[in-house]
Image 1 (cartoon, rainbow, N blue to C red):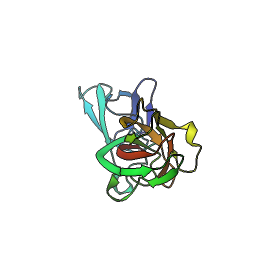
Image 2: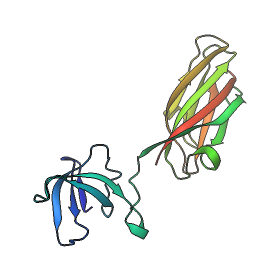
Image 3: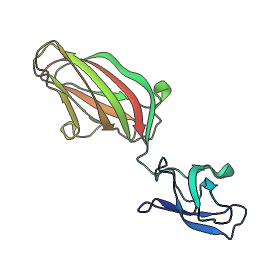
Length: 189
């Protein structure tokens, strides 16, 4: 592939066996996004008419031999099997804890920039809530969830949260001590 035009969702491609023949304006399969359509990638093209090279569609991209596919642009969402990161951790009121989410069997690679998460917590205190943020950032600028309507109730919610470059997040309990569980099931590259 030579280039991809996001405004028309078409690509310019160089035919592999005829290196001097380039096709422009080739429609792209809408199941592909721009993070897959990188210059230098090999592509699978379906031609509908052998006499008209412009009557085609780009179906897929794949690595370019031993050099591999260029690194996808940041921002790609990848879903992984759910993984329990935190299991019934007691978080005292006004206490901030740091948790590492990447590596090991988590399915989350180091270097990812965000995670899809589900958080569940309970508290014996009315109006309890928690704050989540990338490690060493201002907690109030990211996710604040909860505000339990009554004591001894449970909150469950999910979201997308940036993480630090070291794969860590901070969680702080507000108003009351919380019993906390956190699952991750995807990441942003």
